[in-house]
Amino acid sequence: MNTPQTIIIFGGTSGIGLALAKWHARQGNLVTVIGSNPHKVQAILELDNITAICCDVRCRTQRDELLKRLDTPFSQLIYSIGKYYPERKQALSANESHDMLMLNLQAFQAVFAWASERLIHEKQVQAKQTIHHTTPATPTSLVAISSVAGLFDFQGASLYAHCKRAMIQDTLAYRMALAPLGIQVIAIACGYVDTATLRQLHGGRADKPFLISEQETVHQIIHAIHNDIALHIFPRPMKAIVKLLTTLPRPLLAKIMQLQYHHQDRK
Image 1 (cartoon, rainbow, N blue to C red):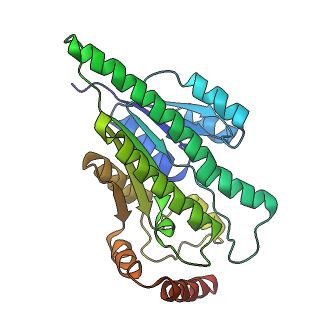
Image 2: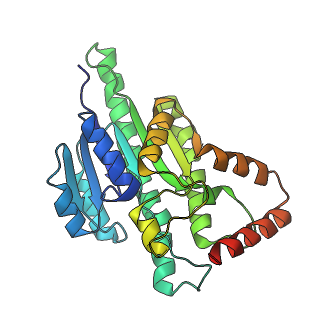
């Protein structure tokens, strides 16, 4: 019988994060999810194998207290927090810009820095134990849930896209740095996922290109982890489009993306 893994999911109280938490719980793993909505946290506490903690990771004090509280060794940490505002339709306010930067990038950087230090320390302890023929090393991984928006580099890209691009690049840098220690680091760049948040942002509609379900998204993320895929882009049609568009000169890519945004915003 396999030993249960300890999983930490930031942003695990809704959407993709919650779907991943439920999947891991069904496998018998011990899951801790972090979210900022106390009502969602309270509802999740009723589920088996899932612990929920309320924390606004934008607040450094709350975040630091949370990281001190998470003192148990973990097998896998997933950062699934994301914030999106329709900035193409109206200019972002100062508060909205701050939210986007904090949740999509700065809090992610703080969490990954803390998690990598924890895993490095645990690997060093495991290495000493292995020398003395005790416990074998436990597989560990860090996973960042980003977006295909972060794969396009062109003038006029949104703040959201810039944050997601930086998130992907940071994750790939961690992968290179932690590979010698056997720590797996994976970046996920998914297209449109049919979540409650997406529908709320678009007036109850989810008529987006290549839309996929939360269940399919979970399947793809688990596939990426099991196969150690550095940057997993899905769904497949979206991956093909990304591959094509990223070969174009930046000025041409900018024109195509602006036309695409204009077409979507008219719907």
